[in-house]
Amino acid sequence: MEPIKLLIVDDEEDILEVLQFNLESEGFVIDTALSGEEALEKLTPEHKLILLDVMMDGMSGFRVAEKLRKDNIQTPIIFLTAKGTENDMLTGFSVGADDYIAKPFSIKEVVARVKAITKRDYVTFPALEGDKEIIAIGELKLNLVTKDVELKGKNIILTKKEFEILSLLMQHPQKVFTREEILENVWKNESYVLERTVDVHVARLRKKLDEYGTHITNRSGYGYAFNDSARIYNHEDNV
Image (cartoon, helix red, strand yellow):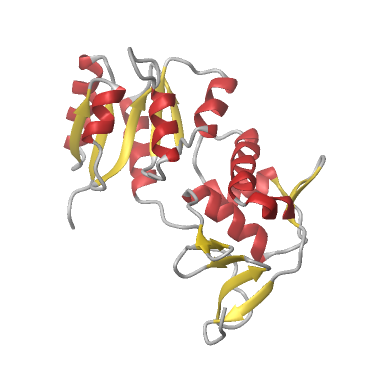
């Protein structure tokens, strides 16, 4: 199995060295960058994860993440930062973070989080009746096999978390899922994930789905549901 390549971005060289040494000891291949600008130059499709400091001279980690997501680069991001308030964490998730670790951090915790994300696969949902692979309503189509989402004939770029939330809701139309249930299905056993993180991801998902985002409804005090019955197709059908 080919080693997994990571990019670590921090303007403190001692932190870079510690992270590089420990992650290389775990079998990862490490590239480093001392600034956001350098990170954007060095990042390639071979990198499976970015460990990204937030507070850096020049371009901040949040700005780097915003640019990557705007360019539809969906490489997973773990923010490393001394800014550990709830609002800071929500900001991180809103710009596309997959995880958020506050400094000072435990190396064992960082290694565990990196392994969890690099080994992560799409959540396994309850099986649909029969051999079904596409859920569609109107011009919104979700392919459970290829993990693609199509809107009005064009592919929509979603992060894994956004895809998993949409899959969960569309496979069970009308069912209201609490934030806790969505966390259990999508984030599973990941630590330090707040229920409000669900709200941030749903807001981003609604925006990407344009007018179809209105089908994701918020039942105040309960959670989220996909409010239209979906037509479900076999792979033999024309869609």
